[in-house]
Image 1: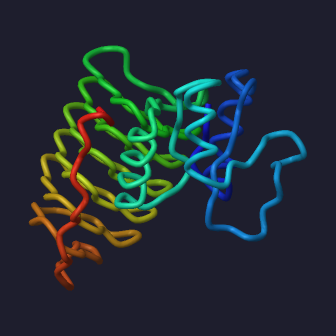
Image 2 (image 1 turned 90 degrees about the vertical axis):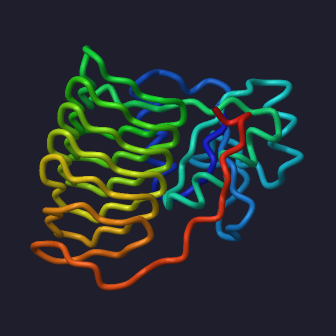
Image 3 (image 1 turned 135 degrees about the vertical axis):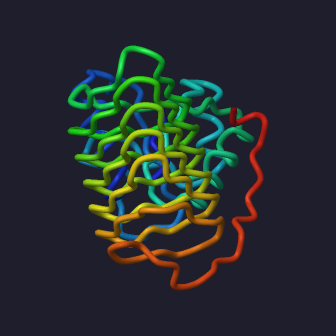
Length: 222
């Protein structure tokens, strides 16, 4: 497997794979950082080019997982590695709880330790759920959403694609967020939010608009 990224989140993904005893043939990918050696922890090779990654995906394993944050960047790298022949897979901590009834986790998710997802929840492709988050019944989380640590999504909430929810934010029951919504840390969202908005505060209020995310899904990443 390749972990796309080799810094903060990627190292947390490594711990999940350690807990799952899935460390054989494990690689990291980082083609931008100058301060990383050829191996992490003297053990795991760091790939530096798309060509090197493509060889591993072809000759070792097509599996890759996302080890970096930011909805747009995660979507971009998922599409890039799928175009190289990769198969996007999820990493779910054994210390997370995922509901057993009616809950769906799509490929490419990272669900970190201490997270709780209850029943009848849909988690879209490429979603990052950081430590200590809760996602309650009948909620839908769109593709490539990022939930920062300690976010609480209450029942019946819908979150659109490419949203970023700040640390400790709360989405109250039956709220709907459009695509590409940024929720500030500690905000309490009490009503629906249109796409391409930034909201902050208690209760959350719109402070500015955003340009739409331009990345289109690649069918090969599904």
